[in-house]
Length: 197
Image (tube, rainbow, N blue to C red; front, side, top):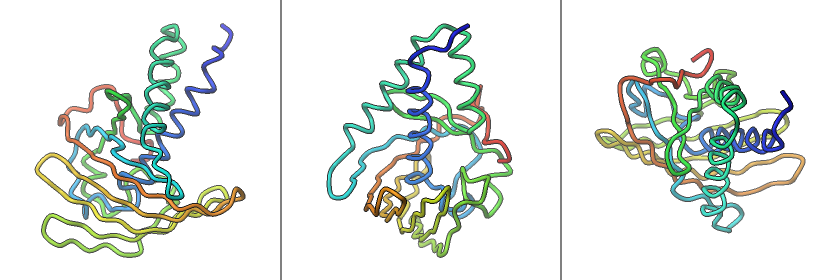
């Protein structure tokens, strides 16, 4: 069966979503430190600013378009792409959000979330009541990300603000992310933890 012309765009959208999750939703924060409990979490980009320009609408629109394109594929192609996303530890959510599954092992260990390859390492982590302050350094495929952030923890949600500098062959950029993670259920359903997670 020939590949859909939308296929590359959907994969790019999924990759962008994974990058946003990684940068803004706790890849640099250790699961035990931030208070992630096992189960299904939905992640939504609340705000993203790149080099002083608010990109929130564009990011959420791109994610929504990728999800719409995925939904319109024939069942066989959709299942194939969803399997690829699930292997990366990312599932579809509502309105441009994405879902991740935190296994009991991920919740207990003192290791970064969604970083099975060890590309990011926390350089500082301090918890004060319902807030976690962190700094991190990441290096992947010629791109480095260094930054800091703060996570505010409530009963079933975690709001994270991250500020970082990314450096690659395309230059150096400043990024700010605000994300909200909401606990959905102890049962992850069809969303699997990241491979190796």
